[in-house]
Length: 184
Image (cartoon, rainbow, N blue to C red; front, side):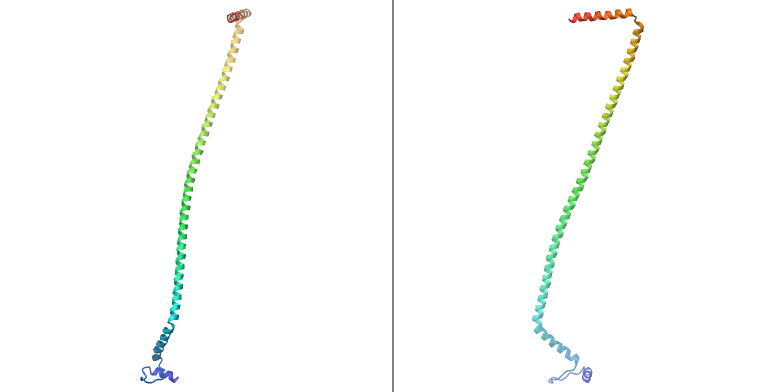
């Protein structure tokens, strides 16, 4: 312990040159010892340290190169994916546009078809009305003709007596006979 205490007490004490001994002054001996150790380490460890640093440098460069290659591949895949996305978006837009035009076309076809159907129904209605009108007119004509015929027959029956009736028949037979001679 005394040596340790002496070494702290004699911090300012430097031994004379020419004497060789054990220096117990920690502050005076550490820089010298450290410089010797560092010198030996640098001299002998320079190659090992240089090799370690070169290996580390090569690994770092290889890692950087691999990272750059991976980055390049990722960028290339990203560009391909973006190109595919643009293509799909264009196709989707085209399908959407085609779908809208198809819907519009179908809508116009449906409107035209409905219009044609309505026109046909209107024509059928008009034809049916015209047919029913003609039917009603023919029925009225028949009715009027029957009533007129009945009225004429009633008038003839009331006005004609048997003598007038026989004379009319013989006159008509005479006219038929004359017609027969003209033709024949």
